[in-house]
Image (cartoon, rainbow, N blue to C red; front, side, top):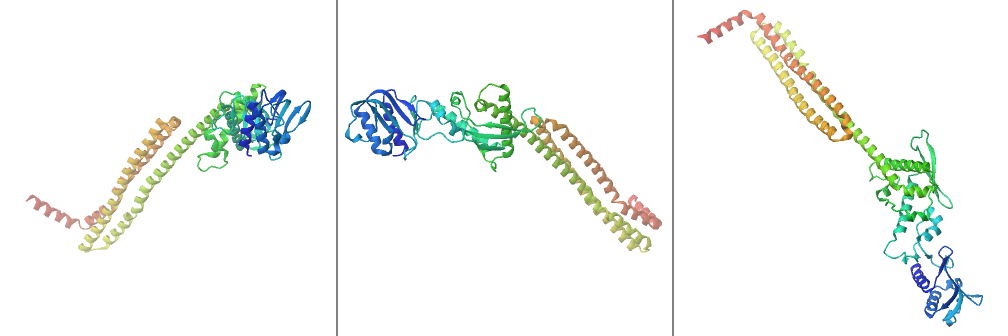
Amino acid sequence: MNDRELLSLLVRIFKALPNPRVLEGGTKIKVEGALLITQDLFDLLKELVEKLPSINEYIVLEVDGIQHDFSDCSSNHYAEKNVSNLTVGFPRRNKIPEVYIFNNEFELIQSHKKLLSCGNPLPKSFYLASSDYISDESESNTKLQKIERVLDWFSIFEEISNLNRKGDSCRELIFIEKAGQEKLTKPIHFETNILAEMIDIEDIPDVGHFFDLKDEKNDSSLHHEEKRKFLRIAFVETLARVRAQKTGNDDSLEIVKSLDLIRNSYYEHLELFMEDFVVSEFKKDIEEAHFSYLEKIESVIGNIQGKLYAIPASFLALGALARSNNTESNLLILVAAGLASLFTFLMIISQKGRAEYLSSSISFIFEKFERNSEEEKSNIGILSNVCDIKESLCQQLEKKKKLILFYAIVSWLPFLASLIVIYIRFNEKINSWLKSILQYLLS
């Protein structure tokens, strides 16, 4: 016989008895006073003994002051007979399945107080007479659901505690966190007592997503360790507040009443952390953008400075020009200097286009940062920094643009110098050519 079959049969016997009492932690039914063993009741007792012979010694009938067991049940000896007392016991011995019968939820919790306080679940098979509730029914019991939720919350508190140890009657949790305005960190002890009075608390919130915090490591949960810490802090702060009120009640009862306060405190800590985290990430993005644009601005001038080596190299042509007396050679050197200046100029001017692109990019990116600062309350304090960085980058870029223009002008110096040298050496011929060209144009 399994536990469900035994419980079902015991419930039928319990209902067939007049004013039965429940004794010994829900494992004994007793009727005191004169009792008629009807045929139906006898048949139920007989069926019980036949299916579970080991229970025979725990069924006791008292007749004329003498106690008898139910060993001779097959003879119908007790059917339709009066007895003075009847006891039906079903302890967890001799292979008797674990079942319980209680008058109500309060008796059940009171009976299993130590087991529940040590983290054990509610028994699987039991019957509550006042509400005619059987545990294996699909319909749940709202009062016992509260105890199950308390067990879930206490198991989470055990997992997030710094230390814990199991005693004979409960679990002791030790938290090492600062409570409230205290300057020193000291251990705070809490015992997970499950009390029958908890079923009368109006509302005990479901664990919900807090169940994920039981695992010390959870890769699927963002900021998992921080969340565990915030729940630990929220618990310690609430426990300190409860003890300061000195209600006289057990700490565990007051903590269960304050579960909403623990949740709200947790959410406050988490919200502050997320705001700080968002601000930190936002600052990080701004700093990365700042340094990135600084490097890009410097690289624009760096590329130009590498190309400017062509300018002093072009002046070497002036030495060859000074030594040459051949007109064709002079013209060839002049053309070479002119091409060198032209190519250098074009390469420098190309960097001006890159500088213009950087200017547009800076405006676009930092305008986004500005909008983000205005829209997000947590980022409003960074708005002035964003504007300062943008202005600083724009000023540096404008300086670089002016420097690009200066380098572009300098790039023509070798060619201009070559023209001047040639004009000085051949000024008479050049003046003659210019006069001839002028006369041709005016004729």
